[in-house]
Figure (tube, rainbow, N blue to C red):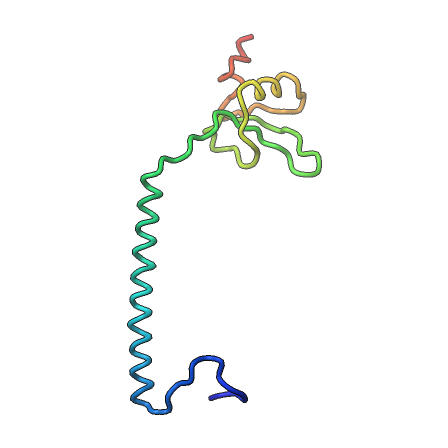
Length: 120
C-alpha cells in the first residue's frame, strides 16, 4: 500500500523475484549488524571488567530532602544503609557529628565509633 506522492526511500522494483532478493540481502545485512553489535558489547564488557572498580568513599554524609538539605546521618563509606548523600572526609564527618545537633551516626556502621568519638 503506497500513499500519495513519491516514496522518500529508494524506489523498489515491482517484480516479486527482485523484491525477495532485496529482502534476503537486508536480512543478511541485519544479521551482520547484529553480530557486530554483540561483538562490541562483549568487548565493552571485557574492558569494563578489566577496569578496577572505583574505590568507595571512606565516609558518607546523608542529607535530608527539601530546600535546606541539611545533614541527617553520617555513615562509613561501605555502609549499605546510605542511600543519598555525598562522600566526605573524616574531618568533615567528625565536625558534623560534634557540631550539628540533629545529625545521627548510623547505628549499623557506627562512624562515631570508627572515628574514636565514643572513647572521648
